[in-house]
Length: 603
Picture 1 (cartoon, rainbow, N blue to C red):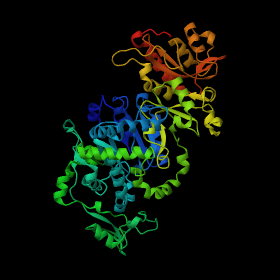
Picture 2: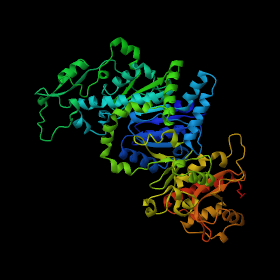
Picture 3: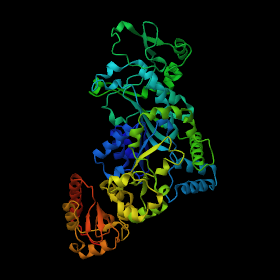
Picture 4: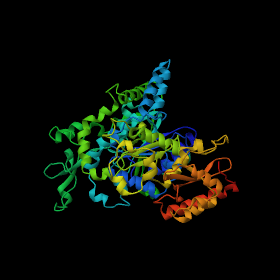
């Protein structure tokens, strides 16, 4: 599927949702795919719990992913069923103004077909990966203890959540888009039952596809099931062990005699409800298999089951779904996008987000136990909402093409090539969706004391950036991707503009090597070459962050490093750059300077 995605989307923008992304391996593979796609491509990685979001971001940082990948990454903390329809519009100083302009332009189109096509283009994802939480019995090889914890009631209790997450993902999927539903369990109630419910819902317009192309014939898998039974453990007294939402864990003092617990099968939803005194409990009608004729029509055999002993792997279930691209599906999707657009502009209260409002209190209570861990994550908003002056400063100093987001509490500034925060958030989304990362960290306070102090939006100006902030390695590398239009030659070979953004300071390779070798100590301006001195003097009179760079004779920037400029002291590597990062920068510099032995110069 990864190879197929790369082949089909190398020249187009793709918008990928990884709805249950932690611990991060899937997200990193998706980033590799998206890095070769169109410049507006983005990966939106989400998880429901703050600790897992932290695990995800830590894994991406630990693997030192290339800026071409991480500049296209958004990370959020939200329940999958609460995610909002993303609206991708060209960035401007005021994102709400962008939405108004987008709606006005769509309303001015002269045909309903044109309006439908414009709305379909505006919202949604082209690809979705829903690797949902599950009972995990497919991991018994690496985690034998999972068998001691296993109970059929776990899968019964998870079914409703899995279906709700998958249904929301299907609603956010563009017509013609692909969605993969997967688990690491063998339980058909968490696997085929969820898929059958998705495909049976005509409003979702989903069809099952073959998960693997023909060239992957060496992959051993089993077809999906057409029929299964629903049951639960029952004690000798006739009481369900885990039914009705009760805890499935048994006390340590419980008798371990297997005769105390038996497995009871329920022929239907009504049968299960009757056993619980008419209460549904953890049961839902979608848990039972469809009729044999309907199961065949749904093509559940195209689902794939991977058993551990077939290929010496873990156990997995995978189903690839495709959203239909007919006129009816496109109109229905366009209506959903239009409702979201109107809701964000205050013109309609009937947004799709209202579907999850009834569960808002329950989910808020579920998160309350992890509030402290949630507070450890950044809470990002588009930069213009903090200060339009700051937005102007950042775009003038570091590049007009990049997308900037800010955590006002920590004073963190992130930069991305294709991660407009406004696509995922607005003022009404903040209670259910937390944007924890958007691209790479570009700027942060030089000291923790400055970070902890409260901020007034009036202090977010050029003086704030110059006197209190420091640049980060990942952020300056992301700038090269985000501002490629002004820093690099395009595919036709056209030269970039003669001068990069104001904060970029071109230097000779020997000077850059010396800066890296000094480990944060300043190099006096008088010790630099005359062309570099002239460039540095134009950088300004306030001490502040600069991007030290190497430029080809053509004007293309081929290397960047975070630096700091001081009118008296000179130029140095930015504070906080680790020895490991400095060595990595040195290797990149040697590769860039030696490539084709091209000469560099200053302009």
